[in-house]
Length: 316
Image (cartoon, rainbow, N blue to C red):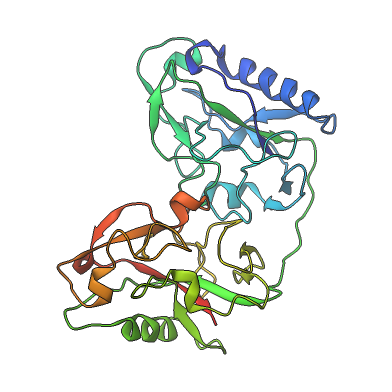
């Protein structure tokens, strides 16, 4: 499975057949195996997920990291690594948008640019750095926009075996945390412990505190961090993210706004951190647990502290 490096216009695609041709052309340019590729794209009468036939076991080109074992996993957004590499194995730029015309369950939406033949409105796009809902439904663009395609091979059915974490654990909380007046970062850490489902280890909130950046709260000498499904989502220094942290301590996949308090993992507080996590009337920058690019995993939008959001919890 890959994202096309080149773009198409939805209104000039020529239907699902044209999308398939674009995928085949890209696969040949990337010297990928000679299998049948289809675009993950819905028309007005056909759902994207039903076009995958009996295929399973998708991986990325280049690094060969697994994306999803089954169609059901794709449809539910339970992705392992995000499909953010193109046919040559190179990462697509941040903020790339991918044409899907598809909702979060792999089903068609009413707007399809007249089945990709007319400039007559808007159409749904996904975020290739995402999981959860975001990978397939993350906004709309006009039918005359330049967009990329998801291309999936459908000629094979290969089981992806379960993976196991090979290092420290990270999870997103199941429940939301609301900052209260006279609170502190100690309360955030205690919430992480309470949400850890009894796992061993010391868990702390991945947030900015005082004049220190978020990654300064952790020992950065002992390898990367893993989700419970075995995916290495963050590098050793917590400066880049290879996958979303959208799995909680029970193994369930959830996509939520996450309290963070900075615009980046190495950036001290610059967009508010609820007055060092002590004022409910203040604001903070947040992340999106369903995204993995540096601008979305952390530091995405401002949120009023009293409304509450989830936390990233990492093992020390």
